[in-house]
Length: 289
Image 1 (cartoon, one colour):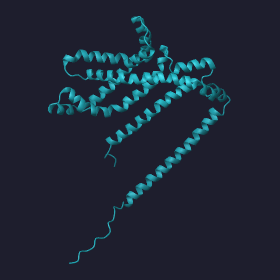
Image 2: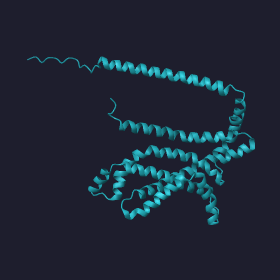
Image 3: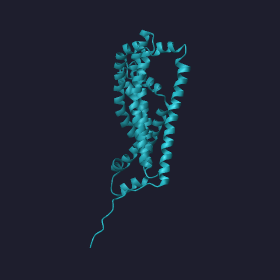
Image 4: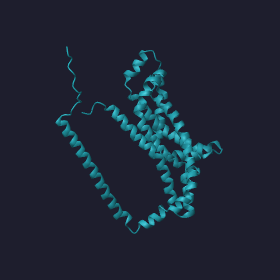
């Protein structure tokens, strides 16, 4: 008996309706690109006509964007910027530890823990309401006076940042913990896990995915606020720029310091956007028709 030969395998052919949809999407994408290019050119023309092509632009460029002054002031501003990075690196660790403790205190169950919950809630209310610059003044000038001793500005800056940002980060962590469905916690306890192991192995890993984008936004804010430690007498990027401005009578060093802070923040901002988009895509998988 002769076995019939199988014909060549044919792949799935999209329907005419699907082909029309794809053509419509391609046309819409092309129109979007052309519209974006046209609006960008129009915006550039408006900026050139209203800002650059004006009599005062030369004075602005001379006072804020002088390349010679920027190159001359960059080494001193960079040395001060390293101090900002040092304060930032230490503050990240201290804020993470203190904020996690505060968040866990606020999520404790049972009436016996009410005093701890009240203290943690009062702390977050106070330091979320106080401006950072006031905390810097209170810590930077009040603490050495009370202790009657000299404290390095780096230590005072780290302490002020920790006191302030621990309140913000603690609320983000608490919100992430409470966003995990209670059934997850109950199931873990039913399997015999203790309260600590439930937090470590079940609750916190799920909460971390939800609270990572707001935590990264707080990190960006802290990157900027480390520039305020200059009011404590620390020779950071802002203080070094101020010294250069007093010498050159030109504001370009401030722009140099600002560019350094922007370059520090951009990778974190882009990483935050990428992670938020990736998380949103994972949550919406299967929901796009």
